[in-house]
Length: 323
Ligand code: ADP
Ligand code: TRP
Image (cartoon, rainbow, N blue to C red):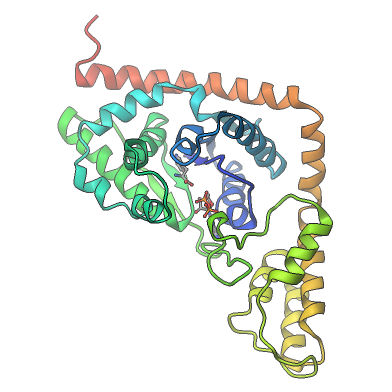
């Protein structure tokens, strides 16, 4: 079984990214062959600063490794280290009906947020399909918001197969239902674009303040029982605390006598402890940039080997290889 996923280097990672994308990917590297990459071509659809793109790409490599990606188990690389993917994206786009892309929510949602409606933003799902099909992936761990792009990928693989003969298998999305949507500080889906995110890494004092000041709570007095339904504190605490500690916090909500300030403090402590090993690994990685370079270089050459095999097969099938 081959698992593949990509993450865009478009900003600081938050705990929604961690539980929705990173942790499932890290778990799957134990179960099969894993190909994980930093989607820096994709990030160009929303970023234009070369320095930021470069720094975020490196930053994401460090953070992904810190969060448990094991380069002995997973092939880890930057998307742009395998430029062959653009050729496959072009070939796929020749069988891609306009309507298929026009229906994509992510494009419409990004335009609504004021992101420039470039051809790249529109064609983004065709590049994502190429990412997936170039490595003959069986399964793709992603968050719920990416499900439609997986449908586009399957459609394009099917159209290629109809037009040129059996070339691709149809990849399956892997969506973890338990962590499908991590709520943000305001209770909406956590997202870097909504300003409601809790970063995985950051300065202790600032993060403590963020959790203490920004989580929205009601005005129930300290002595009174507190609602457990739709509680942002409980939903986040559940991700980090042991089942016993979580049950204890639920009981404290029901009994009353404990204030939101204390619950937020408990939440912060659980979150801070949870990421302690990752923080320590990250410190090490930041002082060993040569290690990160080696991982990405090795990953890129392994990925390129695979890519060139697929592309040879495709070029032959579509009539581009004439020698
Ligand atoms: P953002 O919404 O912050 O811009 P991205 O769109 O870059 O995040 O998402 C990167 C990955 O993290 C995707 O696989 C996405 O599904 C997952 N993800 C993002 N936010 C959440 C969330 N709140 N809960 C679960 N998964 C999430
Ligand atoms: N579009 C994905 C996101 O924004 C990133 C991505 C690019 C991806 N190519 C991929 C994810 C291939 C899975 C497979 O999160």
